[in-house]
Length: 147
Image 1: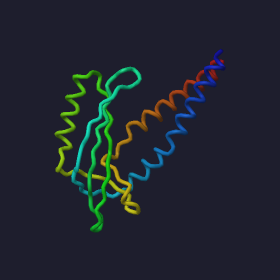
Image 2: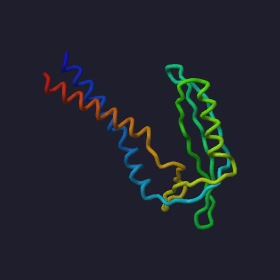
Image 3: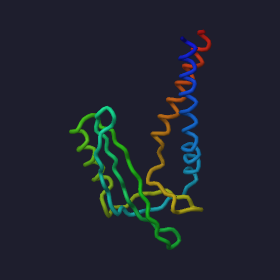
Image 4: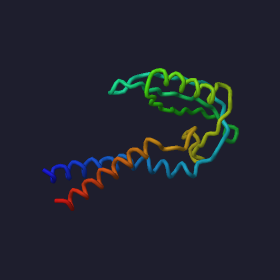
């Protein structure tokens, strides 16, 4: 039975880490991206529910920036997972203040392909995937030595 758990944990761990590879490559590339100042064109908060019926908010930010006289338009989405509905509206209000239309923000773009841009350099979801994969592989290894 332990062998079955070991195999399952190993497969989940490897699959998680393999799925993280494209994100890792992009995160490494983002480190070299150039910074620019952009103006926020539009924002939109989309409310939904996850599979556990918890509130989820995807807050989209559309922005425009210039590189060598050329105007580029990009967007980024911030995913919020508040614990309750009352907390959701408070968080959206905070984002509306921080990312008000017409205000400026720093964006990062690939100098060889300025169409690739991001308002954030963080990789929070990527870290969760790497952490889960690493923990599953660790459990598989521990189960192997316990067997």
